[in-house]
Length: 139
Image (tube, rainbow, N blue to C red):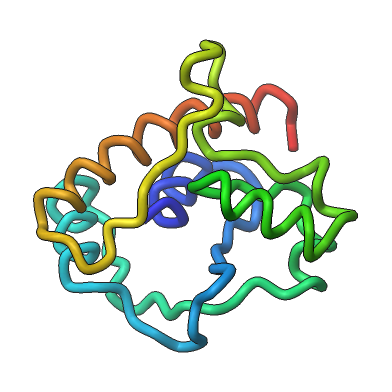
């Protein structure tokens, strides 16, 4: 969901946005709930998206890595130390309030549609803030 929303926010900029999971199996389709929420709330079709795992090479070549939860940030910092200084919680990267900076966004997988909707709104707010900062720093 975050990839789709960030691509939409940065559509006029020449920035490659891609996603990868720290424990993702390669080639899995998004859940029906994620597809529905993205279609209904954002008008974005993510049905053809396929998961991929984060590799050291991908992390090292990225200019910026935005993650959902602190465990993801810690994992990347441990596995790819060179990526530590460019890895941020999604909410942290664009936040200007201290109370938001440590906040993670939970994974809704396996939860009801209502949880996906709640997570969508968290991602949407954080992506707008992050996209604004990305544009400001001309990443």
